[in-house]
Length: 272
Length: 272
DNA sequence: AATATTTTGTTGCATACACATCGTTTTGAT
DNA sequence: ATCAAAACGATGTGTATGCAACAAAATATT
Image 1 (cartoon, rainbow over the protein chains, first blue to last red):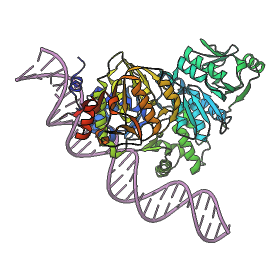
Image 2: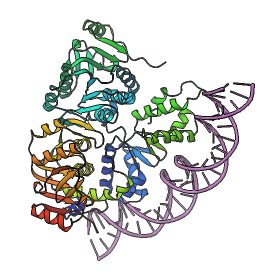
Image 3: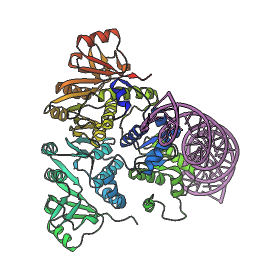
Image 4: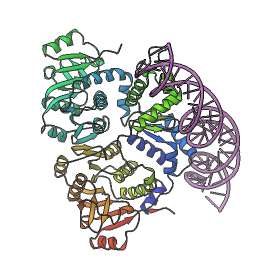
């Protein structure tokens, strides 16, 4: 039996106190939308004592579903998803450096396509931080939200929502992209080798491929850990690229291939 | 388990303290990586007194660059829904009740259009909570993210991103909606009178209008405080509605008009 | 160098939160 | 209906944070 409160809803009498599990699920939902919740606020909202909320938060924190803070709790990461988080965890600073350098190549008034992924989210943060007044077309919800609150104009693509990356993909996305042509595109990828750019999920690769076609100059932002790997789905050949932003010089084989394809290589060095 | 990897950005020159501006810049950078920072942690890292950090956070909060919390601060909630203001806090429960009742009218396998707004976000939470396996088309990013992590299939509309509601609007949105036809639509609004449904922003009204046309049955979720008001932009006439979900019985004038338009009225009552 | 200005630290006190304990209520099963 | 288990609320105590006023230090200005 699903519980009695459902019967209450069926009887159109809602507003009874939520039970433990319902409350905790609501807390998690809330944290998908806001970065932080306060115990006092939640206690009032659920009409329970702060002690009960404290117990809820402690329980959720024990499962690593939230991060406790004094007086409240925050999401493990900003509306993003665990699998993404795990991957991000280690190389945060490399990504940040790559994004900061790449952001300098975007100027006011330009039109830019930005795809989904952890590195491009960092790019969006860097662009927002610099208040670049560009027009952005993206399929990533975090990128749209980050840039949309700043100086940039943001156009979001349609498509099927993928929770794993908080982005949209699919035929609607591709068809939409075909209606536009932009100054530059900035994409990420999960692998880069002499074979070209590749991705583990076909749908995301298709979006990158289309973006590469719709831009005058194409930039790839990628962690050097992903050099030399060839993923399942190809997102494009090396000669489709104009610039590569990364954090370490590629090894000889890849380096030669990149030079042959006339790709500018920009290495974001660690700050001294 | 908290990693200390972020230490590299911060003071590496031992003995020399960072200046105010540099410290605040680092706080903002930190908040781009983590959703929440604590005063005590930052004070230790920058080797300054908690009071200084408090002043820093207060200053940043005054510029709306961060959200203060007890003992720390979090990244500004990305315009996700504005109205958590204290004044409307009381109406949160009404919205929850309305959403909970409305959610039970949606069944597995149905196709649904959901528009943007605080009430529809509550609806999304209620649907996610009930794990309804429906297909949803929406122009609201919070709705997409909330439902997309659950059992529902979500299709996001294209369009210009509006930070005020974290949703997309514009000609691309309308054109996209015209390609679909769904079982039901669930919209919110900022006003309802005998004149019909209305909205303060033209672009959002246009989306609601289009959704009403594309659905077999149309539902409006609205707070009873908004009864009797006629807003700037009309989103539809009363006879386009099939069901009205609200929290209190409309007054005679509006009630008569709703009955004349054959609108079912469902009042979500508070549990006694 | 001397002074003015800004920034930071310190102190004392008020408040909010954390935590453990225990009594009460609710829930679930028989 | 009765009982046991779980969940919840209330209380008291201790700690962390907030706030305001003032003192000390660093910085800028002349």
